[in-house]
Image 1 (cartoon, chains in turn red, purple):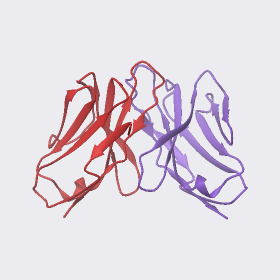
Image 2 (image 1 turned 90 degrees about the horizontal axis):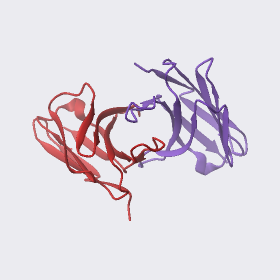
Image 3 (image 1 turned 90 degrees about the vertical axis):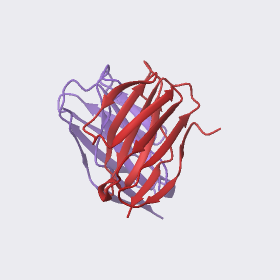
Length: 113
Length: 113
């Protein structure tokens, strides 16, 4: 009965590869996010979707492409991976029009070698 | 845009003592200030939040204060316990901005028995 789940939890890959991270929430929330947490623990928003519609698109390289097949899922596809993409990626969800309480997933640790 | 500064970056306290973490924000339009706790290997979890029409809020051993004039807010943890050891993040956002949270850099709290 996990609220926000991500797969995989760990991802090790080589430079130049393409990879995807999946996120699912069973809370019935309308809004979902992707955050990147760097090695210094800094959390930065990447994307936000509301009811499958892109709302926030921060200055993220276009190698990163989010996709929301339905409002319970928000996946992140990364092309041509670079060393600097190594980080922990968190998915989060939030009920629209509520208290802005964001529920985070457990994170996916991406290591690019 | 909003900029949130958080201090200290690390905080060591003896079990039973109090811990205080301070944050300042730059955008006077910000009106929602949550605090998140991130335990090792997990995603951030909301522990308390405060809105701009409230000066103080308490929940058991944790409390948050807000000074809108000075644009700073603080987290207070009393009677600290080893399970309080974690990274704590403050954040700020503006209602109507689709929940876009600007996070502080985090404070590593270590509670020693």
